[in-house]
Length: 111
Length: 115
Image 1 (cartoon, rainbow over the protein chains, first blue to last red):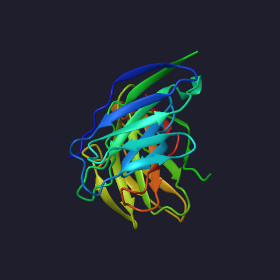
Image 2: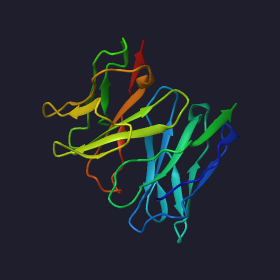
Image 3: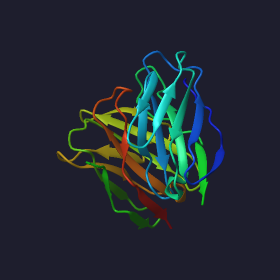
């Protein structure tokens, strides 16, 4: 089973770039890496997904090295509203679609 | 942007009663899921559903739980005889296909409180 490891918490200040790294040593060849954001009392919100190298969208960038054993979510110029829990997910493999959420990284953005 | 919608946002039910949680997945999505999150704990997978059949389920999804797609738009989770430990946020999700390149999109959940 693919398993992810990410920091429990991070602190930042408004306007800074935040990088959250996730390790997934046992990722399967076909699996994508997906990041979600969750605010209290809301559902996980899809942020970005990638397979290799770099992916960028309007809210974040995702960097994946060639060995794919880790990935880094980059949030440019965070604001107070980016305070949330961020989850790094990879599939369980074997065709299973169930997502296994860990504890995520609790990002606290200060003014 | 299309989104998954869930109703009600909060459901209060007496222990032992049946409850049905409703979801409207994104319209062109084919795979549907239910997850739950007990307060302060991790999001847990319950079940996935495709082509009118359960495709995967977790140990949590026992005989007290059932899912149904009664029409072309709704996807429901029924708990037959609720227990206190069923109190949680229940999230519905959908994805266009079952491939890992297709992210699951979540609704904002139903908070289920069992008294």
